[in-house]
Image (cartoon, rainbow, N blue to C red; front, side):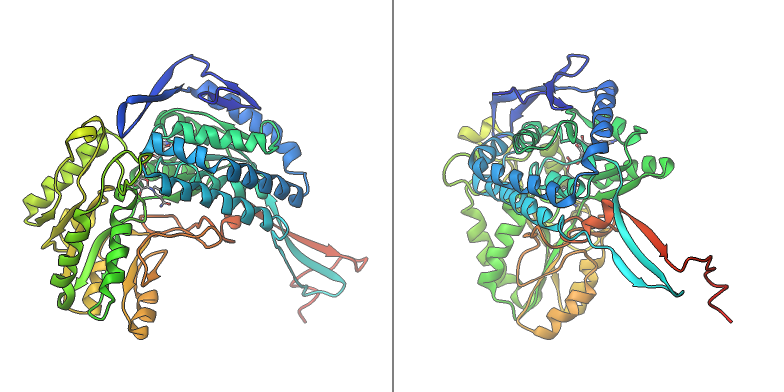
Length: 495
Ligand code: NAD
């Protein structure tokens, strides 16, 4: 079996030209080294881009439904390898096995969905202003796409980008996160084993500098990025100056609004999953609980009892609810925010510390933490913490709840729990976010629905669903004049 702890360029597993590597370890068991991966440089990026440019010539000309057949094969290979891939993903990025299986399943769903879209990729035909003339628009691929991703959905998110890119006839150079290189490599191996031709998808491993080299490479036509708002801003600047198309999926500070008529048992399940699933390290994690004062105390009693029962540990062990955070930097950032919250005057209801004792000492674990008495101006209510920390904000009305929900620079996901259909429909329109769940937590995207955020979470594009194909295609407008004479639009047909 091929050693996948390498780059993958033009169908070959290769080391970085420099021979340099970086180490990847299990965040729950530091003694478990996942492997050494290439620390790539600009020359590796160059080779990968060149391979993708060459492959574009044939891949873009293949009938789209034939590309779809290959995407479906990838779905089949991922289905066969679901458990193996999930195990390795948990090992390198920490979320429990049942969650990493869901991550792979999302990729499988996306493969079959994108495969089916290759039989649509609709353009338009519309009437012409002139006689004996035919107007239509068709979709063309863009070229080579640079794909840069975060570590928290290391299989699903790259496929949200690469499957539609490939379906539309583009080729790709993929740079996974340096915190999840193995999942990225196993994904690319599945592409190769499913019949993706050489050069169509290339993999370069490494840290942010490799991403920078990819974004600024003249052979990259479009960039799709998922990661922090800070990094996204830098990428947008580069792409702006180089006139490249760029899609950005960035940070969030997602609110869950709980009204006084909510079913509190349902809310409880939603909070536990939304706030502490993936150890709070989802872009869509519930990080603000905006709750009506009439049910505030009762809800918190329920929540404390249940959150105290969450079991922390290595996600490949049985009965683990919450895994580690990704690295030491994340521990410092999250505990730093917990200190900020305390200094700002919020009260730690549960948690508030690094989790220690037994096996936990060998990993990066933080106790699930709930702050009460939070007000909307506090930093813990406004900034992305990206960890298992929930800020509870008490409000007196629906209008106040929405005002608080919207009072942050982000706008990815949101939710409202209410039995009142009028409020539910108002919230759909009133909350400033790309996604609103009614009576569900802020997480739970489905592959065939658009996904993305407003304000500083995104830049107007969407992944998933039918809308992502607008990003990965250029519209070509075609006029066919079969009148046999010169017809001048706006001249021959007016007066
Ligand atoms: P990050 O921005 O640090 O890194 C993301 C990727 O960008 C990595 O592959 C990294 O190597 C690369 N990178 C870093 N600097 C770069 C540069 N200057 N040029 C090009 N590439 C560069 O983010 P992270 O810590 O890996 O992920 C966490 C963040 O991702 C959170 O803010 C989270 O909300 C966000 N996220 C968003 C979504 C979404 O769909 N909106 C999904 C998942 C994660």
